[in-house]
Length: 235
Image (cartoon, rainbow, N blue to C red):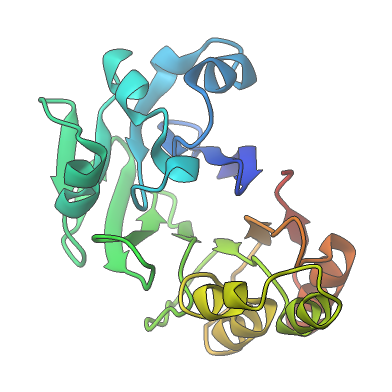
């Protein structure tokens, strides 16, 4: 059974521990490595690998230290180059090219963000469970069948963003970037409606904005839309 443990989920840093009971992985390495160690009770030797979505510091700042600890880091060549990660622990992967880590079969897919070569991930285990992970994207072009777990960015609400801009709490220039780089509540809803949720056991909302989100509202609205258990990753 898939277990998900957020270690950090905000613009300050993102990292998530997942396991299917056999193979443990780290998704993102955007918090200090010592904080990753502490959150995992210093059991990082049990990690079979680390998947990186892109090179921004809040997702990859600890990648070099993760590699020094003997853990392979899997990311697109664009991400590895942007982070300056050479060596045998840096494993280049490509969108739509499946690979395996332990009991996980992993299919990277392209997402839309203002970086070199960002990826999302579809992970399937031997028990037939499927987890989709996508963050820092304003659109997901793909549709997925048989998902059991969803980890998806829900960074901001367009309504809250507009209210903050009107009140002078957020600069107007931020809106243009957010619209072309991050997943809004409205886009998350559209994505969920377009996908097969019949087997979904839980939905995790990730990477909520400090200023332009409302955790209780986001959780309530996604639960009402999907009828599924919704969890919000702690910031």
